[in-house]
Amino acid sequence: MKNFIVGILIILIVLYVLISIPTQNQLTAHTAKALVITCMDFRLIDDAVYFLNSKGYNNNYDNIILAGASLGYNQTKYDSWKKTVDDHIGLAKKLHHIKEIIVIDHMDCGAYKLFYEKTKLSRTEEIKLHKENFAKFEKLIYQTYPELKVYCYLMDIDGKIVHV
Image (cartoon, rainbow, N blue to C red; front, side, top):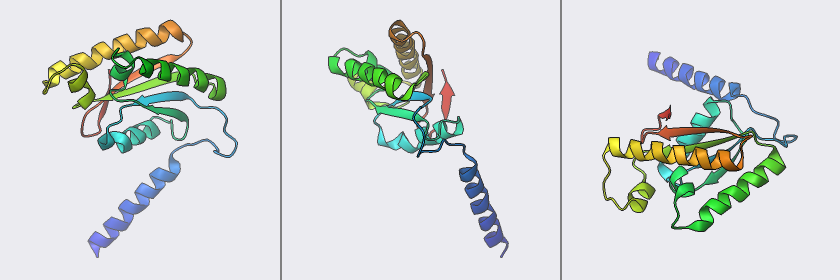
């Protein structure tokens, strides 16, 4: 009986948290706080959404999925990727009046292994590459969109995010 009551309490707490997440009225909303760029990795899609909700972005951002996220924007093998993201940023500014760009990279990213032609990256080496790509991403975005704030996050494979 005690386990049943504890289980019910946990369910009630989860429901309370879900109800308490602030959101805008989707029937009348015409603006979004940010444009979010995440990697395409299926393992971390839910974790990115949970993180964004916890930061107050619940249903308040446009989203682009791009292999490698910041690396996908910075790489030169596929020229159309950067242009596509830039076109989406322009459109998000025009339609939804975004003020921020959030890019979420993650550890154990296959795109990093492919673009850097390495079958394995040490944790230290991969973090260094993410930081380099974040710096390049920020610089390129600020050159074109100096009015937008840029936030870069690195997600570990367990879903924990650290601001870099």
